[in-house]
Amino acid sequence: MTVSFRPRWERVAPLLLAAVAAMAYSAISIFRHQHFGSSAFDLGNQDQAVWGYSHLRIVPDTLLGLPSILGDHFNPILATLAPAYWIWDDVRVLLVAQAVIVAAASLPVQAWAAAQLGTIVGVLLQASYLVFWGVLAGIVYDFHHVVFAVLAVSVAIYAVRARRDRLLWAMVAVALLTREDISLVVAALGLYVAASQRRWKTGAALVAVSSAWLFVVVRVIIPSISGSTYRHWDYAALGPGPAQAAGHVLTHPLDALHLFFFPLEKTRTFLATLGPWLFTAVVSPVSLLLLPVLAARFWAADPSLWSSHYQYSLMAAPVLAFAAVDALVWLRRLQPHRTWMVPAFAMCILIANAFSSFALVKPLSELTSYLSDSQSARIDACLQLIPGDATVAASNSLVPHLSHRMGIYLLPAGNDSDYVAVDLDTEAHSPSNVVVALRAAIVGDLADGYGVVCSQGGTLVLRRNFHGGTLSSEMTRFLGGSS
Image (tube, rainbow, N blue to C red; front, side, top):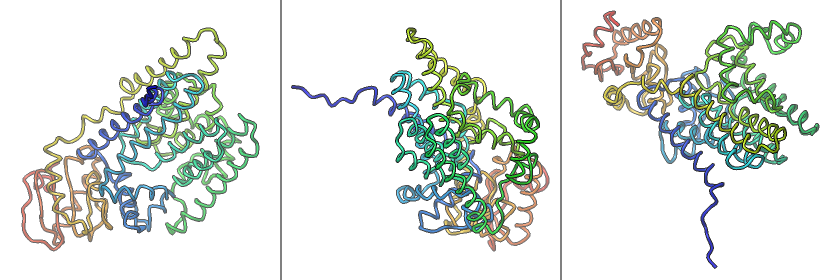
């Protein structure tokens, strides 16, 4: 008898798809970083924190001016990445880790969809998640610890559906250790469990645990670390605090609804979020988990949260994918004899996601806007002259290339740093006030005894109490007032 050890394609296909996606995400992120598209926030300061953890220390977040990054958002889950720095001591570890975590979050979606609707539909919905513009936008923006919650919530929804409570609570723990506001998503998960599955005790426990955790972290833990009150309340239009905001929403629902959708950029992002999934979220109770995610964005005063850029749409991705599974199950029940409809609709969802990502929102379009290889090599050559134990004040895009140290600052802060590093090409699209501040900082440092260690084109590295070196003609023009 011949025994075949070939794995079934149903098992291999989802893993292969996730692995290909992880490699593609990694390549995109690393290309972006190596061509100086990454920034101080969020890659630089999170790299500094994990670098500190890899040395078994909680280091000050010198970019934010806090005793620890935990005083900004409570994200101790970052410490789990520290051992990877023992293997490869490089900021790109975070980018690869993010790629793997985001891709892995597609596997629970595929597993549940395959169990309900078959392997082909499962792979189609997994691919839809992987090409969703919200996922790609997160990949094309540095590293963010929210990716742990993306994976945790994806597995948690699967655990709820499969009635695997131990797995559910393990994922809840991961989610709560990611950042404080994920508690609201966990609370919504509790409401979903209670309303959809009539498991009142489990649902109530999830709501109670997440609410208590949010209160303790925001009112006790973060203030005790940072030495000040919680700094991320950004909902002044609703009220000065959570209680007043909740009261305003209940007593002025039309005003709250208007604030949710206007200015129109909010409406466009809202439609762009649900549209690629053909609005399947409206028929699924799991969409309860979208409410805190979208409300936190569209009720906020910060316009960057309303846009289709950055990592803000990552958290919605697994929820939308599971909602699509529900919609297809509902479709199969409506049309049990038309078996072709479910895979056809799943294919339409994949096409809609691909079209949205590559023809409408186009988050990957910025990949053509980075510095050339020669420009990047020039900057790298100058940065290599800065010792690893020196403190550095640097311009934004240089920070994540220098954040493996105790003291890294975003210019014009860090006036007494050992080194100053600036590149003009990476600041080409910065607001005029930022450019003026950089010019003033460099002029001041030169007057205070800093000397030129490296000056090539628009790249400049200065050292305190150093004599020698001359400014490039481009830097001389810049300091003279020519942009």
